[in-house]
Length: 213
Image (tube, rainbow, N blue to C red; front, side, top):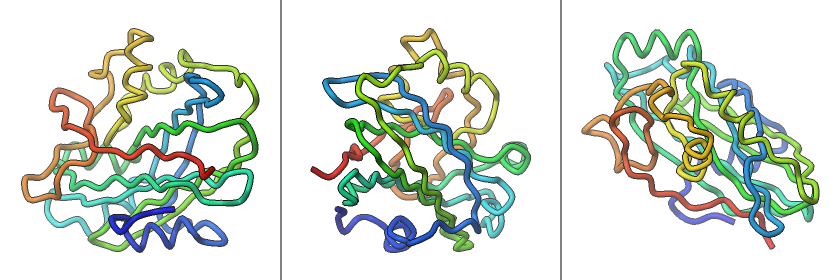
């Protein structure tokens, strides 16, 4: 399920038969909270920096990323998309090239077998990639918020952290300033749809990705 605001390219990537690896990504999934029968997972997505930086126009790095869950019934849930133009300094670009670009998502899932699908597009060069990950959500799935805080202790460039995950990190005495901002929203970029960590926090507009009924 989606709406007209979702990029056709992202929709194609999310609906593919097999994932595309032209823009490689790695993901770690951490269960961090529970509400009723839903378990909240943090998805730490790391996109390889080299292909992401190809085709940048000056200091601007435009990108789109989307997440969706395919439920136990094989139906695709609602797609969550984020888009932004990062203004990346030469120093920050070196960090992205060496360490990649990190984004941290949140998704709530009921018990059962799910497949998480993530897609990323660098909109200037057209570089694109997707990743499909099978996930078994257990009843009373064990939670590990401390493990999440530990995974984010490094200084990898970070584009955004979902507000729901920010609140989990705050409960673990994790200071957002420990996350290294990848850049700032370029003034000429689209309306902010991501929350940048660091001193300049942009408001986030998000649509929770929920599995299909």
